[in-house]
Length: 285
Image 1 (cartoon, rainbow, N blue to C red):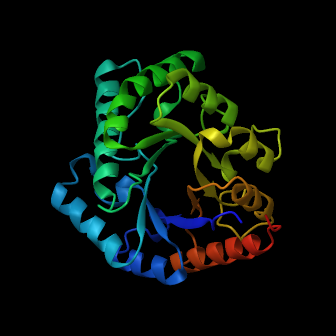
Image 2: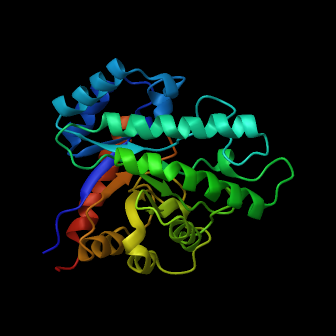
Image 3: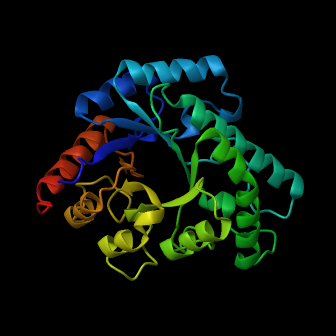
């Protein structure tokens, strides 16, 4: 029998709710981990000091939650861009990526061997600009990522190249694109992930995509195809979750929703209820 899947949720669903209250609600609903968007911690998360990191880590511990990792990486401070021709701005941006590697490692509980993942989506901050072609932007992205990988390796953190559909970004639009970059860089600290919402440009069934690229997938985001939380649409999560179980996937299955128009607790409750329902629909392995 495959190990049980571990469910987490991304904290931006809860807006500016006090972190202790977020953790209390997430744990009460049965989630095992929390994924954090850095902009929810500070307007300038690069200067989130060690005392605040320790307090965040201890709050997670007090509620029995694991720290899963970071995403929405470059949303704050404003103006960051990872592939721009402006060398000063590009350097400043990648300096923040280095800050986030340390933040990710520092938020991990002392007795947790996993140091967390960094989901590198950030469509606005990585897409081509300044007259660059998509190929040029992609080359810059790969170059900078390769030079960042040793730091991630040294801290035990994994940077995950997130495939984003062409209506969000003009680089890395499919899981195959992301895996190509992973192979090109060749670092254990650079891997990829799967996100249901980001599959516009994919042509294969999602379960088959996950099966094909399983050796490189270290994280999974679940949501409806339109970005709402699980249970708000008709997406059948059972085949995806069943494939993950069959493959003995040991990473996190994390709820990422983009529609915050409803009560956060309602979003979180509906999501985990739908995932549990679909887990029960999995065939025996």
